[in-house]
Length: 152
Image (cartoon, rainbow, N blue to C red; front, side):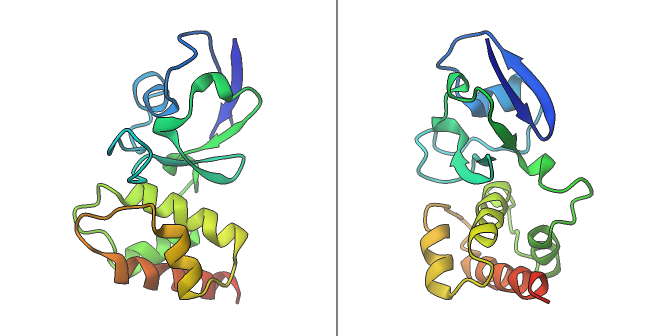
C-alpha cells in the first residue's frame, strides 16, 4: 500500500506498482487537468509537482510516491490565481491550451527555485515543455510578468 497526498488530500493505492501517476490522477482520482502528451516524458504536458519539484507524471510510478506530496494544476491555486496563472490569462498565452497545464506547472516550479529568472533560465527550464502552437514568446513574457509581480 502506497500512501501519498494529492493537492493536500491523502490518497492510498494498492494496485499495480507500475501504474503511471498520470493515469492514477486522470482515471482514478478524477483530475483531468494533467494531460497525456507523448507518454515518454519528452513533451511536458503531464508535468506535476512532487514535493514542489516539476516532474513528468507519465514516467513516475505510483509505487514511488510513498509519503510524497503531489500537486496538480487543480491544486496549484485554490482559486486559479497563482501568479503564473494570472499572468497566463492576462497575456493570453494559451492558443489551443492543451499543453498549458504542464507549461504552468513547469513555470511555477522554475519561479519557486529561481524567483528572478533570466531568459537563459527560462529557456533551460522550459525547454522540455513543447507547445505545438508555438506560444513560446508569450510563455516567456508571462513567466517574466509573474516573477516581476512576485518580487514586488
